[in-house]
Image (cartoon, rainbow, N blue to C red):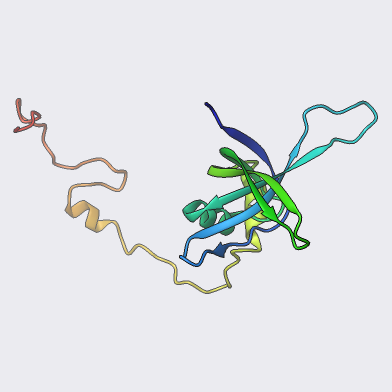
Length: 161
């Protein structure tokens, strides 16, 4: 039997990491996936797919993805039953994420991450090379050529073992 799901779309909200009582990471999120068929004269429709991720995958998602980020999810479909606040029995269908990947252009991913990981401006000291004389001491010229190293004698290129 095969149970494999692969979707690509955009996150509908910022993912929020939760911890189980035993300390495992879990995140639930929804991915908006455009339908491929568009009826003439109508707007494109989207499906909203619920996804759950655990442990390192959950940590990765909450760290690097935000609302609107393009994401590819590979996993399996699972169903679960629960009771809502009114005591009604409900059933949920979701993807259990095994792997997730970045999608879209780097510029759009960078823009999504800019607000999350913006570092304060600091005046860091710049590294300045003093001179290239030390390279000449070990037999390398400024252009990268070796100086004074002879060719290997025959048989020296073989491994000793």
